[in-house]
Image 1: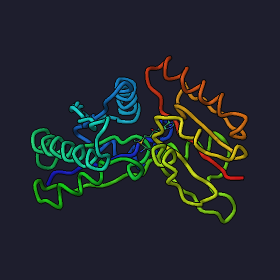
Image 2 (image 1 turned 90 degrees about the vertical axis):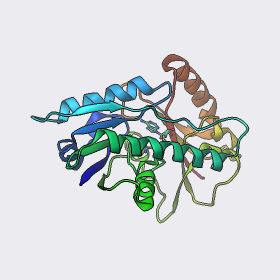
Image 3 (image 1 turned 90 degrees about the horizontal axis):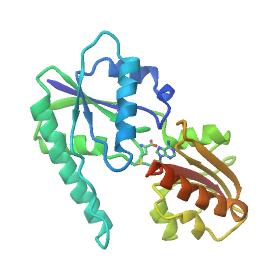
Length: 251
Ligand SMILES: C[S@@+](CC[C@H](N)C(=O)[O-])C[C@H]1O[C@@H](n2cnc3c(N)ncnc32)[C@H](O)[C@@H]1O
C-alpha cells in the first residue's frame, strides 16, 4: 500500500516543527512540492532547508509539481475554488500514480497547519472517496500562523470566556463577521481592517511572522491603521509578496 504524510511545518520558523513532524519527515521517500506565486522560491527553499536540517541517514527526493491557480477577476468565488480543487485533485492523483511505488511514502509539507485554510486533506479525502487511487494517509499537526502571531505579540487569542472567530479579509470587507469579541483575519489582499468602524478596536498585526523579515504592529486601530497600511505596501514592494495575519479585539 502507498502511504502519504501531510505534515504541518509551522508558519515560517524551521524551529516551529514538532517532534512528531520530524519523525514523519524521516519516513518520507518523495516530497511533493506544490508552491506557487511570487513567494514560490522562498517557500520552496524553506522546505528544502527543513528536510536538510531534520532528515538523517535517509535518501529522499523532491518532485515539484505545477500547482493550479484559482481563476480571479469577475468570477463566482465558490465555483472558482471548486474548479481549482478539481484541478489540484488531478495533479495529486498523477503524483501518487506516477511518482510513488507500492510501500513508499509521499510527503506534503503544508505551511502552518493542514487544518487551516489549506485544501490538502480535503483533496486526499475526495480522491479516496471517489476510489480512484488506493493509499493510507496521516496528518501531522503544525503551528499555525495564528498561534505564531499570538505568541509574537504575547497575547491570548480569546478574551476571558469569549469566543474567537477566524475568517478571511474578503469576509471582513463584506461585513460578514459574527459577534465574537475576538476575530482573526487571514488572506487579506485588500486592507480589510479599514472597514472596521470602531476606531477603539485593538489590532495585533503581523507579517512574515516567525521569519527574519517579521514585522509586528499593535495598537488602537484608529492610531495604527495608517502605519499598517504603509508597512504592508512597503513590505510588498520590497519582497514582491506579503503574508500577514491580524487579531482584532473589540473594545
Ligand atoms: C492559505 S493560508 C494558509 C494558512 C496556514 N495553513 C496556517 O496554518 O497558518 C495563508 C494565509 O495564512 C497567513 N499566514 C501564513 N503564514 C504567515 C506568516 N508567517 N505570517 C503572517 N501570516 C501568515 C496569511 O494570512 C496568509 O494569507
